[in-house]
Image 1 (cartoon, chains in turn purple, orange):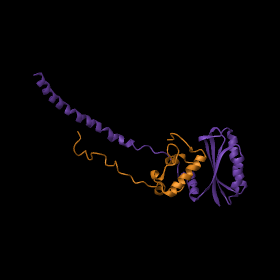
Image 2 (cartoon, chains in turn purple, green):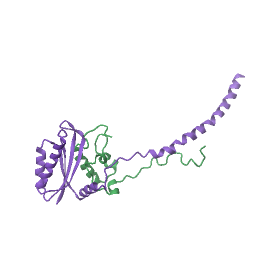
Image 3 (cartoon, chains in turn yellow, orange):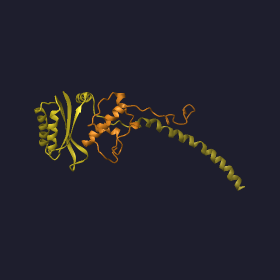
Image 4 (cartoon, one colour):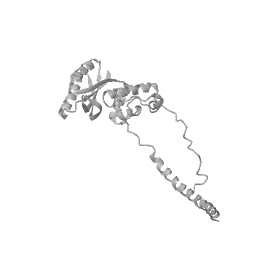
Amino acid sequence: MNHYEVTFIIDPVLSGDEIKSTASTYETLLKDQGCAIVHVNAMGLKQLAYPINKKSSGVYYCIEFTSPTGAAIGKTELSLRRDERIMRFLTIKLDKYGVKYNEDRRAGVISAYKKKESKKKPFDGPVATPPVEAVVVKEEPKPVVQEVIAPVIATEEE
Amino acid sequence: MASRDDIKFLSNPTIGQQRKKYCRFKKYGIKYIDYKDSEFLLQFINEQGKLLPRRITGNSLKYQKLVAVAVKRSRHLAILPYVADLLK
């Protein structure tokens, strides 16, 4: 028994019921050919990274299934290719790590990757203090300079 | 006033030190790279949507190949762009 995963993008122009029915037709098509559906992941309407058929968004569906032989895939791909409602599809064979990953993902063990917040924030506190010290240091030399200048001016007047 | 003890280094000692690169997949035991996770894959491509080389990401050869495959799959499904400008 091999694990497979077919992801496809459905035309967003269709109504909600039509989208659901297209997804379910492929579920039944796979079931009819002796495949067992493991999970159907409706990823929903997403913005495409680049336009496909002059459309900028699509409804993503991902069906994970097991098949005793790979024979069912050829038929499914053919019907996906002929279907006008499907914009793009991709079928892959999952290795044992992929199967584990999908199981963990469903169980909530692994969550989707999130970008970490920038590490610069904790340094705000220490950085703020030095300028105060710097100001204090600068004040000291000023009177010294004035004292030096004053005698010079005095000599010039004489 | 800054006392003498407060001043430890004239310059930042960490500047110029090279941090050792490592393969994050080996370190954290990641075995499978999901092509549907665009946020994760964004770490391995540059602003133009090109794959970053191993010498920058530090990936081992085995996982760099898997990353490349995952990025190519997600490009096909329009999860990542083939060509982009100012992606990040």
